[in-house]
Image 1 (cartoon, rainbow, N blue to C red):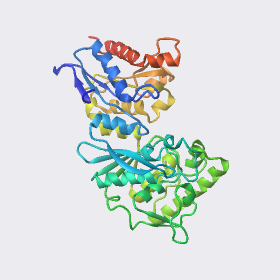
Image 2: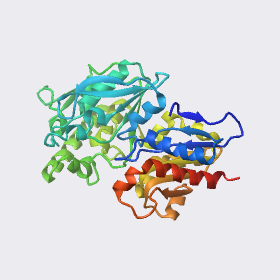
Image 3: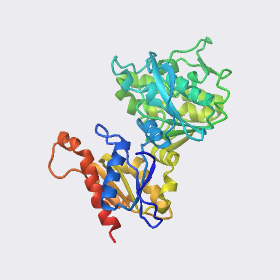
Image 4: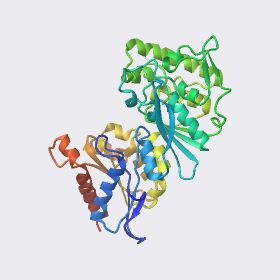
Length: 392
């Protein structure tokens, strides 16, 4: 795509088709999916105006989706990964310079430390704090923090450290990184906190509603994915509770049961209590950042998609966010999902505000064969849908 909006004609009467897919994980990125769908739309309706916007749900891949749409330079920061090794992480700034984007997985993600044994008690998010500090130095007025793929359970304490705060034990000494440190923290020293940390608007992209602690909390539900055994889970839940108690004493803000505070190892706890961050569904946040609400205003058809369209898709994922925004737009265009596989019944699909969902599989076919034909099948299905919806 040469630009987010790629008109095939200048006619004001041309139907406007908005193509706004997520990636097909393991097969195609969102940009390539959009390009394939656009090809199909124009094959069926050569005169259509087509707007292509790469989407994501606020987790891994969101930074790339925004960079594709914004076409702004990629910025790099020398920092550390979740286990303290030197690494380089990226961030983005919107074309107007107002919005900075930090993707937690860049510096503190689980895949980046997959070459060493998992360290559920020691892994932290200090590297993401370094990236956030660089975004503040760049002058951003609001910062979008994309949560997902976290390797740690540190309640966001590491990010605070990267922003200049000090977490101290009962003897006034800095505590270690990770959940281990949370079990020792007795006080906070915010004297060195980045001077702009409390001046900007922080918006956190979350796609879960889990609280910080308890049976459905961050440690219990997500820490096992990061290598935590039963004993580690109990230790981390107690450490997060200690951390939440301290945050409440310092700020008066209680985050223990806050829906969504358990995301990414409890990162929202620190942001909400100390920096007044807002938690938002990731897909909605990204949609706003790429300008989707404006694009939908006169749309005749919306095509979205993802690898697997299932019950999770209509619970805060990209298809759900797109459908909600389309329903609220003046045009109220039909929304059609094109997916690798469709597992959600038609009744539930319609109940979610989605007109229809189609699989690109032509019939019984192996996954490898389907992946090798993804681009062509995306275009074919998009052409069929366009012919059906825009037929005169």
